[in-house]
Length: 67
Image 1: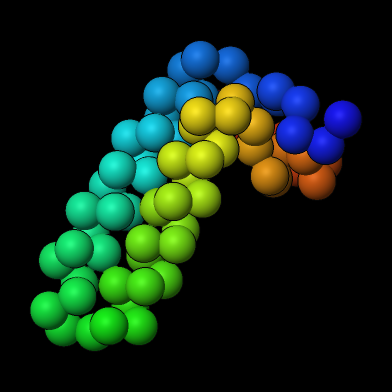
Image 2: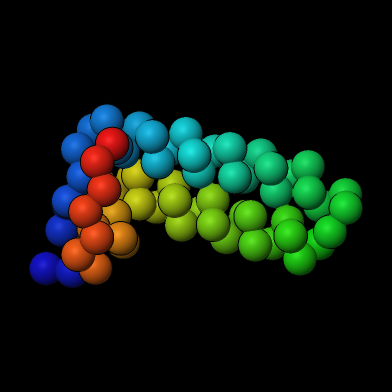
């Protein structure tokens, strides 16, 4: 199963906070660069998706990282 859970609640919380920070940063960046704001918003949305799903793309690819 591709989107099977592979992170614990501590990692989910960290990804959720990081996603919120990226989305906030995209709001501030839109005044300076539209492209930067779009990139930050997409990264933030993907990170929030990872947190909500309990799935990490890096770990799904075999990269082990300790939280």
